[in-house]
Image 1 (cartoon, rainbow, N blue to C red):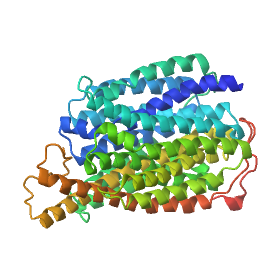
Image 2: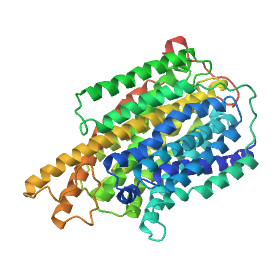
Image 3: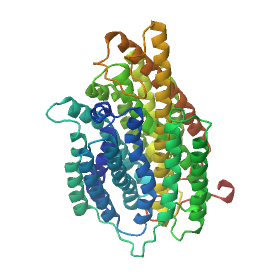
Image 4: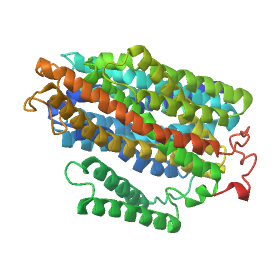
Length: 510
């Protein structure tokens, strides 16, 4: 494909990516309003986000495997149709259970769009040239991350629209993306029977779900050391073992275990899971911070996170062009994971009264780190594996990133609920105020309806609690930095259809 043909096809892929990312970010600032209308609490707040991430995680390997077997364009269009249907249903939800169920379906569609976008790009462009185009992906990701919270905030702050339009607004973009892809995306179709490992998908989804439910409910509905904990953790680990055994025998495994013989794939999978915590955790908890610890509107909460998003956009685009020019990529992964760990550690010091200038620097460091790592981990893996496994390997990286994000947001959300309750109780005792009028039981407060003496106590509790969450997340980013140091840099291939330029020797495989 010529450069012009690539850009034409890329326009449809990027529009689809914008829609998929928008589905996650548009609800971040709107959720306090949505859950206030649907009478949901902190657990529902977490699950509206993690439900979509979980289904995205479970479906990504299936989309990747299908892309190695059938038409990539058709799969992308099917994923967008699923997104349209699920968004319509989500906008019609009458309670949190219905909304969470629709978010599961929405995650399946978004998983296909995100995974297939990278796979189609890899089929069109050789690794050496892919950096410049991956930069576009990073820029669109940043644009959707910027636009999502702002659009969601404006929608819920506009009386004649209402929060349901947070789900309807992406539908026109999806229809345009389908039409553009139909006209511009022309890739060869592999014609052979598809044998999908549905059992493996169910097992890994079950394992992750059980562990997520455990970390969400433990310490509130039952003790950490209880029979429920033993059952859920034991069941999750058992399903994980069964998943590995299933993948060893499956004719077309969703995640071929042979991929992990490559040291780069194994290490990139671990790093992606750890980076996923930062990618999804940052937007989720910064939104709560600005609304519940600083008393800002949903629209202002989106505007105040701009330093992080601009850092992500600039670093992603700049790194993509530099990789294309010089062919070196590891240095950006090392710098990115270091900045991510630093940004999280600094955000861990945030409180309700932290000056915004300092917060801007902390968010900028976090955004720069995310922009340097998320796309380049995929590039490193795509450059390592044989072309016939390109789709599976690409989706595996996305799988581990979203799995890390889903479990991380769930665990950190549970921690936040516990910490906010603890800090609020301390504040009430120090102020000699009764707990009768204070929010509790994981309830998300409306600061405008609370008695005036309670407002500073509640905002302080949320500011301290969210700071603690970021401080707990920082060591995970630090481990990602150490993991990336161990990745061996392989020269980027110069043709899309050739084998790896330098095969990893046996000593470099796990």
